[in-house]
Length: 123
Image: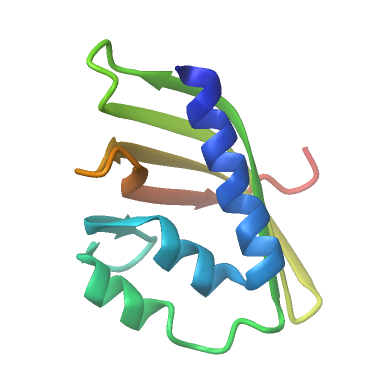
């Protein structure tokens, strides 16, 4: 089950590369999803996250690689974590992330919590 969640997280990253960060995040966020970002209050709910991701992302290349996943025995809740790269305006930022995933009523995995931590540098 963990391998399937890693594959879903990778597909999320591929969608970000192919169709843009904004499109991908809105495709994979749960209706009650939460985004945690440095120096700001949590952004709660898909509608508010849609506002967060409403800007022009055409100059942004945001991809990530999950390093680990685990899924609860019930098969309905899991998490992934890994590293990310953002290239925007010629500047590259590397960091780590964690996403908490939950199956929606249709059985599709959506993230309910996402947070990133910048600062990997050249490690």
